[in-house]
Length: 156
Length: 331
Image (cartoon, rainbow over all chains, first blue to last red; front, side, top):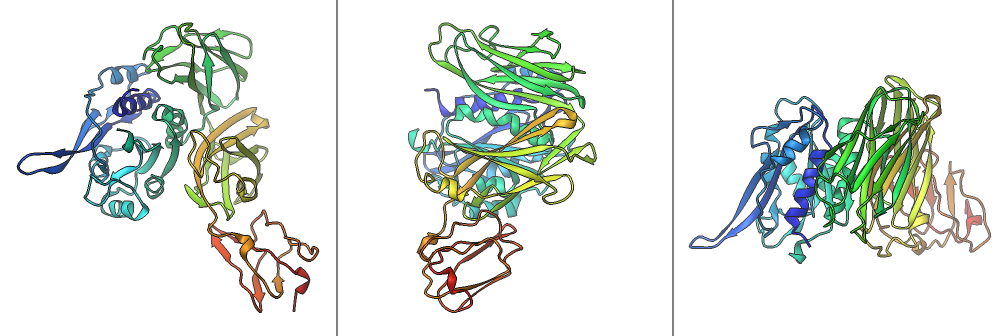
């Protein structure tokens, strides 16, 4: 079976293929890695497949989605630890500036994220965990939609 | 994950496999655009098979885009030029095949379409594939019809009634002649509920969603590729005056009952005030659970002994109990 990241990448590309001219999109991946060495630590990383940390890409024509997908800056990386959900929420909404259409944040996830600063023990994000994040970071005028799938953590 | 969408005031969709998540994209993106597809359905095809999907295009539709997206497998390339094809047939029989291929999908856009019954033919041609391909097919119209689902929680206890509603407007005028039905499914369970006009206000079709008696027997049954409590809601909208049809899909998670109603023991009788739906029955007969909200019909419940639990949430009040002696009223 193909890797989780490749399968997620295809789902994200299909999302872009559903867009129409005038839509704007930004696709980002986030992960947590454990760095060994003299000062071992967990670090959070974010990568932009479409757009950047301050910009989005606008679909300009009926075949532009294919061009966006063709320019996808995807690199293979591994699923290692529960991701820090603060990261996409804190960083992901920045490109939403200057809206021209309804805004939404679509999160593909198996629901395993770190909400207690211990990425080695992932938790299903519960209400209290998320409200803490929301209270601190969430922009009130952006809806967050979730597409979630079976938990895959223990099969990696 | 539900709480993320809930706190973010968004929609929640669940799929067992990552590969199937694309099947909710049409519904989700149309929800974000505040538009409503004419068709939004999934299917599967073996090589050599084709599906013909009829759909109604109304006079209010300025243009539409018919979109098919298929699941990845080893026999399909991302930009497949032959294996999965889509054709459209207009009401007058004109065949349209001028489609644009896109990542694991293709679409046809029709401007100023002929009103009436169209047909889409989706075919899978790869004879090397002995398995099947799954697909998602949708028709997105640009239209003056404004359809929106009233907000409802993403998580709800199944033991309480949930009001669901949908407003239908022709630009800004409420549509009164529509037929709206809500179908709720999980695995092999399916139940349809008609929505009544004027439920919340003019232009709003609504009903109380209460499926406890229908699902409690198999709620805990493990079903393949489903999540316990995850139900799909599909609103079917038919507007005869405009020959228009629309469909809206959502997910909801229904929580298990917090207690067993049959465990309530009552040693003496009850006095019901303003509650017209219970009927007197023989001693020892369990009274069926009410299937509509008691609010505003139930004003108070009086009891000298025993106990009852009233659940008050989401605008409705519901009480579950077994009455051993209904004749003891006013005792």
